[in-house]
Length: 277
Image (tube, rainbow, N blue to C red; front, side, top):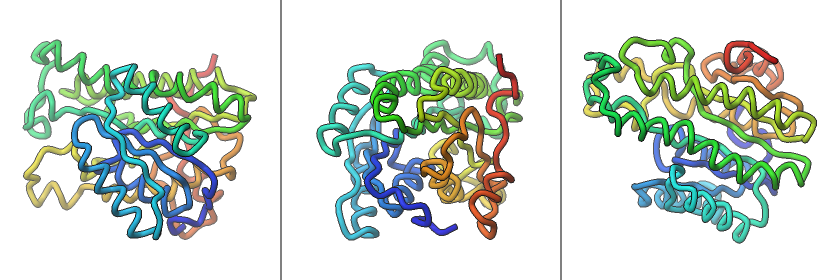
């Protein structure tokens, strides 16, 4: 499936952490599919501004609104939603992508695992605050408007389950396990509203800001291109995925040569650990 195969014209998406890596790829993919997009960055606002310029060059019009906002600050989340509604009138798709990873614990985390008691408490809090509390703060603001409209998408960017349990991956692994729990519970809370909640993940280590540089050639050769996430994202964000909720979509399992529904069947699995109450 080529970007834009699923038309998202007249839809508004908000992508947190939209200036680099997976976020940048998703912002550009959504804009090319016709969506209006708000892209946020907590620190490097010049990155989302550059992403907006790239989108303009690709689409021939301004479709991306870049904003400086930190999802760990409730006032920033409120300001982001207010700016979205003022600029575009509505919010249909929330992509909780902003995240902080193991490089904040130790730059050599890929070769030198850090035992949990060696993690500084402030680093633990920062990662949990961004990866767990940030999605909650954004989703609690976005959900009521989506429910009122009778349609919406909340998409949480997750990771492989193996990484959630990998030695030396505290607090990043626990934070993403918590995000998958949020995905399962929120999908049940929003049942029969027309608003779906799903997790989306690349399916392997990806060349993003989560990987500290410079990256050795032997490691870089095995990293996924962030663009791998765009085809399943566009399907998940489109009306074609109506009724699909409480799942995780693994981009490496998506087969572009298949119809979107057949590709989705290959890539979908229950979010969390398949447990429902």
